[in-house]
Image 1: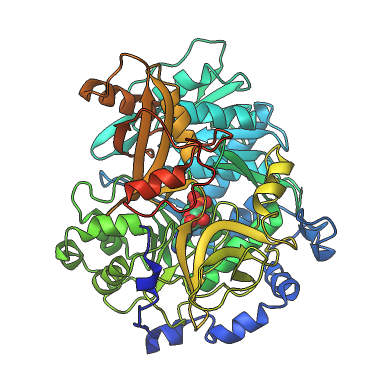
Image 2: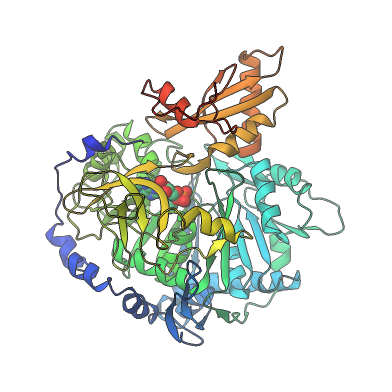
Length: 634
Ligand code: WT7
């Protein structure tokens, strides 16, 4: 939800850690750890020592070609080896690695050893399909164990995975797979959602007609609904058939620290979604370290990240982070309020979840039901709670703190991005907390709020959120678009500083208060979606001549879409057309694009060069002053 930061800065409540938290904490002195993290090279080099390297790095950071930084130079390593294989010879061998639970109450447990065997089998199967180091493999899968196995199998053999979120639809799917030039697609028959089964195969069948690079489609039988397999010369094959008889051993590919690990698409303010490219060693060190620090992870934890693997949250903190730390990670498939609004709390009680990481939008949704459901279940196993995706409003923070955490659990509000790969601004469990603030940059991260010249702004004043020094799990480039990587992120401020695209303030204690995006990117239920993507979806409908889209604030989703459309002669925005348009946008982009309102207009405010001034639409819509409109064409 868009915050009124003036009100936020008046937030005076401070929550200090309890005796118990202090006792359990890995890091007891927050300020001292931040001090230690100021020598970034030394700090991250030390963290890197906790992993298994085939060859140790020769140098921690190479800054010779800014902003194309290199971390852990010439180190050789394999991510899957560190997430899975290394635990096989330890006490963790038979510990549950993945606990899969769905909204129908079905569960599946996979120990580290079982995971190891299945990853190896699938890795061998991928090799048989001709997948080599550097090749791209795409997935369009629900939250299921096979998705985790697939991604780990890719990293084991050095293939670059590219996950397409199962909530995206045909248009978004085609764009992502074609940009990645993926060779293989792994999909499933369907996914469970609110008591229904959503047919994923149908979407994928339709989409891959437009994806010429896909050679093989692997299909997971997940829900068991009948599906049609194509007759096309063995192009489609079932997952279970494919791994049958494959050896359960597979050598881990020796990867260079800087070899690409995965591609993940995210929305920007202009044009098509951007392929964010992450590389191996830095990402590994960054995600594992930040998870361990911010959530105080240790043996015996049951970690639950409710985010989907289709987004960076799931990549970093459902899959890689927890497995790199040898934790048990819970994978939940379904809605938070199905079969009833106690669904999540029931899971916490049944399995004894210790750390829960979720999103403000989910909290706001569940808050509506009061404290009835959080009282029915025993939530005393919980030790630390966390959120991500957008600023958490103090009301939601307090609800989570009181009703779920019973005033015993610190709330770790984590600010980060697809591009940053890891948490950047977040407290540690011992940090004194202020509801609505992500507190300060984590140890080893240098964040600030600056003006356009790069000077820090005084407390209370708004500015651009920037990162001043490189960090290990930073993205390395935008796929096939180095120029855009440099121009979009490193050019706004003099001196090679990373601009995040967010507006923020710091208070007099140095705490960050994130205000929201400074660009034309919407945050719908924490999901990032570019206004221009939505506009192209509208315009691709025959009756629409032109469209402009802005975010409209929504009490639960944070923001939803408000669209202004110019229609072709003779068309009028009646119920039927609104329905058809909504359906069309959903078909193109998927359910993430939540439409709030469509309005028919005769013209749109534009600059003389033809750029739509969304700022003007936004201001008018909110009844605010439109500001400087000297560039407005009349
Ligand atoms: C944008 C990044 C990182 C995983 C999920 C989102 C917003 C994210 C917070 C937070 C305030 C936040 C920012 C950021 N955002 N977390 N704790 N407080 N804002 O990843 O889709 O790449 O979106 O999400 O606006 O720029 P993403």
